Length: 66
Image 1 (cartoon, rainbow, N blue to C red):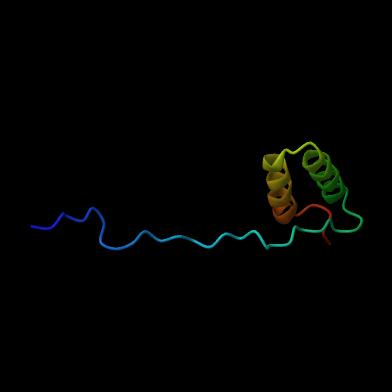
Image 2: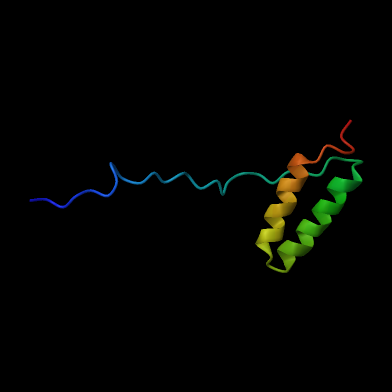
């Protein structure tokens, strides 16, 4: 008798999105400028978690973008 399967098929592996471009700061937006500065300092210190957080915040914040 064969072994029972614990799942119906092979597990799904989502693609890594390493090639995505980072958001660029919007000119004239102080929020974007500050996030870009924090992101640069974090990258220099090897803190990639903060780099990612800054990218997310920069993509999502609406202030200063008119």
